[in-house]
Amino acid sequence: MTRPDVDSPTAPFGVRLALIVLLPLLTFAVYLDGQHYDPDLVQLEPRQSDTVPSPDLFPVTLSGLQRAGQVRSFDKENLYEYINGHAEYFIGAGFRGLAVGEYGETGKDQPALVVNLYDMGGPLNAFGVLVDEAGDQEAVDIGSMGFRSGQGLSFIHGPYYVQMSLFDGGLSADAAATELAGQLAKQEKDPGLAFQFPDFGKATSTRFIKEDYRGLGFLNEVLERSFERDGKEFQAFLIHGSDTEIGKLVKAIEDFFQEDEMPYTRIERNGLVYFLVDDPYEGKWFFVPLKGTLVGAYTALDEASITAINAYTESSR
Picture (cartoon, rainbow, N blue to C red):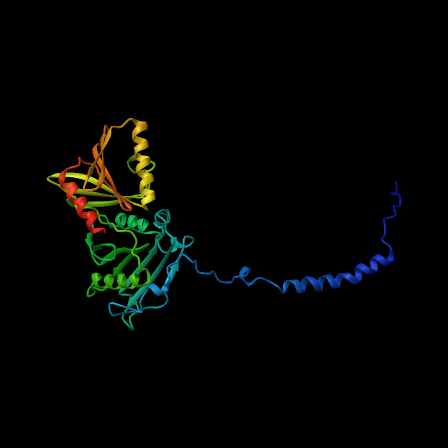
């Protein structure tokens, strides 16, 4: 059985000739278009993230040591390359960028001092990381707050959390950290929030609670410090904010008390309004709104606490 012939459609000769002529023209047009490109879209090398701390924060010399090589930088994408296994913690705490500088003596291959400078996005985030990482280390008065551990030292200034590791027993960690803190102060004029509490007694520990303090969803970014006084330990808390934010926070607390039918009273002392709470779960506690701050403590209000808050208010003016 033979297949019958079928005439395939054929374009007129003139159309075929036009297509033959246009083909090289179209090819040339595509070539020309390819020469026009946005250089920002073609990157052979990755650009440094704007969130990474500037290398200018690292002085050329530190404690008599010379800065060795270029300052290295890391962001959220490659932080694991430097601190694998701990990167997720920093990122979850607000991490924006890390810069690493090494210092040493001329002619020596190994650094004598390594500085890790983390931008944590804000003073409270930096504070939270500092106290988490410090544990039971010795407190030092460097930057906004610092801790010393063996041949290492860490401190905060503004949004920066700084780790310093010394590999030369002849170096002073305190001297190097003080010098670097001074350098940061030149670049970051405002050190950020103050982390001082009223002098309620002997401070035994400090921590930062990012959200839901004591199970209350409206109490966030809280500094908590444990104090010991007259043989009794209790916790005080401090929340920073604008006067408007503090006012809204007080209203939120009062609304919660009324909804939960929790008994509380107000008293006024020396121009300050204290809220005294009789909590069936937490016991007696109090709080007082100040300028830009809410301060409270999980203990009954007494004259010693009032005196401490008065002094704290005077020193903050």
